[in-house]
Image (cartoon, rainbow, N blue to C red; front, side, top):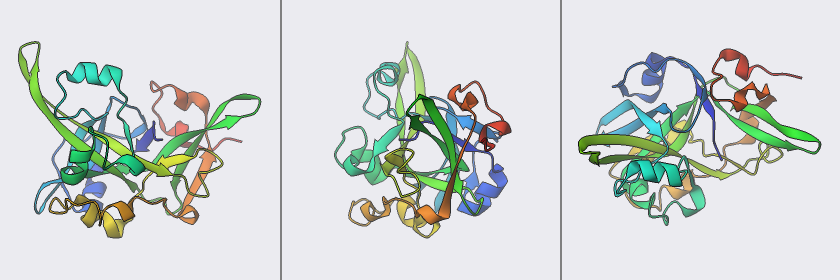
Length: 230
């Protein structure tokens, strides 16, 4: 799964890297982005219209009768790659509303035989930001008589690669830059060309370092969280 990640590459650099127009306020550096908080996504809401937008992490289906109740009852921060075409909450978004979720790295917790789980920071060896496969949704309706619009996203997770397997058996699906255009293309609505993209990222291109348990609290959000500890 993916329950925390970081993004601190400046938005101007991300816009150039993803070939997207920034259409959201600069979110600032985040070293411990948690569910229900706002994160940056890259999407194509229309042909030749690629943008960076700020959405809520935790997908709210467009057909939800009450987004507050949906968020309370269901944790839809992640979607399993194996069932992405089947689950009612995700199958329409998979066909029509895919996105990339920029990240400088993510956290995962490794079980210990004699103590609490140990968090690790996982990143690309190159130091470049990565892009998770994601889905986004737009909910429109009324809450307590007031018209509201909520845009949200979920991160696709799949099998772990050889680096991640000793830490956790799942990891975010990292999309290769050569496949970004295909994943975002709104004209591609059938699963056949998309499902092959949802494979584990090469382990040799990534590294994992143990970090402080301060990351356990989403109230902590500073550069020291990603520093390696012995």
